[in-house]
Image (tube, rainbow, N blue to C red; front, side):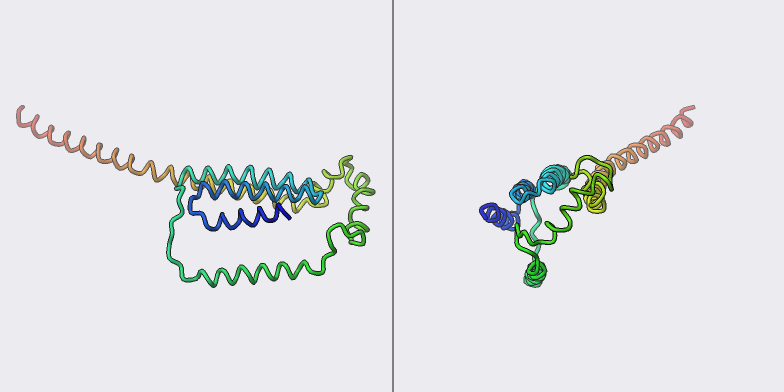
Length: 201
């Protein structure tokens, strides 16, 4: 419960703060709190992924983006704030409603304790051929989920690289213009020297 309160306070701070560097740091803290909650719920593999991707890779990518852009959010008047807030509450309500028929945490009568987990423990070595059950789950049974996580990291890295390339092109444009101006001046000087040399001869 304490971790959830900290996550709520961090989320509110992320929404209210305009300094993007502080926002990036808070999102990393938010991911670490989520990883701690996963550890408490005995989902160590998910906690490891959340800490590595959410607090590690994502934070580095966002800091790289800030280094190429700006560290302050531009405040723009928006008349659709209430509509967005209503949409968020509706979406949250639908998600909460979808969890009402789920078994309680640690419920021994849950389907996961009678069908899924025993099958993984008993059949993973025979079906997958790996001695580690966690590796079998992540690499085979949940292979599409792991592939999706890889796509998320790849997309974030591609976005940062696209921003880097754009910034480089913008920085190179004034230099190219200066070179063109210098070449024009040299051509003009050479053109003026040509008639003068002919006249003197």
